[in-house]
Length: 438
Image 1 (cartoon, rainbow, N blue to C red):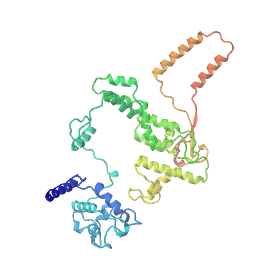
Image 2 (cartoon, rainbow, N blue to C red):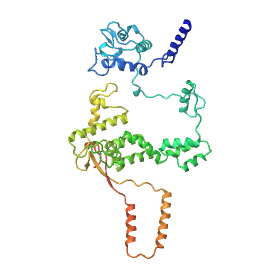
Image 3 (cartoon, helix red, strand yellow):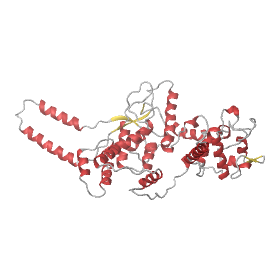
Image 4 (cartoon, helix red, strand yellow):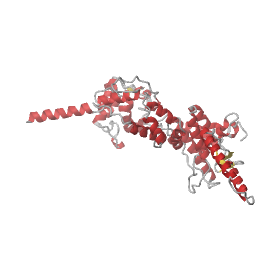
């Protein structure tokens, strides 16, 4: 009985070891080691020079490998010559790291990870976010129709699973149409797909959907979230503002599939391009989406700087993929952004004019005429047909008494064809760099 229990216990322990992630695989610094050092060590031996103890950095390879008074914190492949190992396993509380008063301690599992890491190679890795991705050849698996399926299929095989059955065509078109456009398929789209029996029917469906304005509008939703688009200006009153032309510009840009570098330049500095067009100036509305206080809200300078700070932080998140707010108060503790870097970028946006002639709430305004879209041939034909019917119907009317009917019809026709001009918001770059007179 005891022998059976011991055997079951041993099997249980071995099972736990085998099921533990990376139990026998080679350790990776970013995945296995950095989280431990970041949580237990970097507060005193990390990026921040003001809180660094004993002049030791463990967040960089140079700091960990350097000799100080003949002692090396980490010596790759040499556990007993690595001071870190002796400190984290020391019996004396005055020598133990992390010190007891820090209220942090390493678990036995964490100590084992550090031990294995030093014995293997003690190698550091750059932060994963700054490591360029490497293209890998897709694994060869059965049942895969594209490279994505090949990677998914390989993992499914590891888990002894298989692909789900293919969805029927009605379900498939509903899924992909909702995903790409946010709308259910129309009866015409459904019939066209169901009746297309030739190979590549699904690919042709996707191409048709991606060519629609509905697809551009759906993609624009994600970008407008990044751009913090809102039809109201925020803060206490949160009144309406005329910034919808920027929203429409994003949709048009995505529908035209303009290159991303052009998409970026026009939103950050479209008004500073040589002979900037109204469309390029509209694109700078990206940075007029910041919350704006009404008029000269007290204190004026505070609210102006709130807008500048918002533009710096949003630029960092959208184009750098980094949250830069930490560096507003101190050098970033993990990302390679210093406080000096932060305010160097801040200085660029701080040069933007916020008040003066031609300015409205929080910045410049401009008069804008929406672009006229290329006429749809079907709509033109329908318009011509309706116009012919109207002429025919007018001929059948009895002789009019007075001029009220003709005058009313004429006024209604002129009103329907009039294009409204609206004063809208855009963002103007630093005045001493401006390339146009606006």
